[in-house]
Length: 393
Image 1 (cartoon, helix red, strand yellow):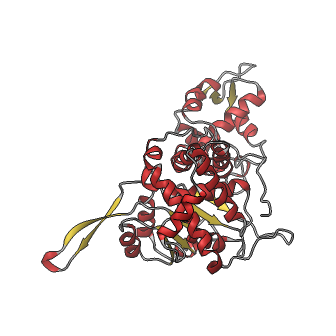
Image 2 (image 1 turned 60 degrees about the vertical axis):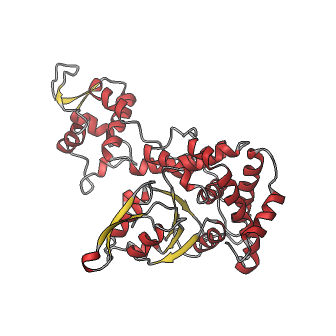
């Protein structure tokens, strides 16, 4: 139950509001309503609002998915709307469970409830501060991303103690001022929604929870009804996934894009646009330096239009890119030939004697040595320069 309304009463309103025979009409209209509800109270971009709406409906249908993406709400400064976003999610998400500084035992026991909750975990950067040892909670959150995962605990007393499995798969919204304190494994399971403090000319409604409980409860009930109605369809869905996303990011977004495709109309395109806008840049962040080096070497070969380089010349060419790390690799000095060889050697690219014009035969690299690695390790995807800026509600 949400907001004190009876389930039957809320669902009667749902029947009135959502009676179309076409799932596309009813689901698309509901998602639009959820988008509008978020944007009444927080300043978010169109892609961020669409993401929040898709995720919120997913919390009512997450059992149809193999993965449940986590939403990570961040901002560079306080008073940017993180807590407000979580308050809205508290009204709309399935069985929302707000927490702060939660214990491991509480998480795995509550996660095992039927139905499982949607955790709204605030101050996540404080939980994982450098002075805290929360590796057990870290592992539990990592496991809760995938359906079927559970933790083993001893329960009972004395001779009656026995092993019990606690399932930990359930949706989560995390919030904190920084994502840097989260381990890469947890951050890779998140869709990061970075909020900005609103400008003076950006106006939003004042959030008064008690006055919004009925409206929020009706939206939540509508999502619950439609999720139950189309659970089997979502379970069988195989949505189109953007190539710009890494494999992990595609796992993260697949449940949300399944909902977007089921909604039809412009929602499939909106979903994919949001996925690329919010998560394609994560591929750049997560890409190893080795892969970046491979493709910066390709850019060097292309820029000089050559098929071979002496090691010293390849390093000089790499260092021409002021935004790359190679010119200041070691305390402000360029990357060394030995370090270059070490990084490239991981991909079976090794320096060799190369013949240059003029009969010079230094150590270096041939373009053909890189071809296999370029095929096996795709180029990092750079963030779009055409990001949509937040608009007032």
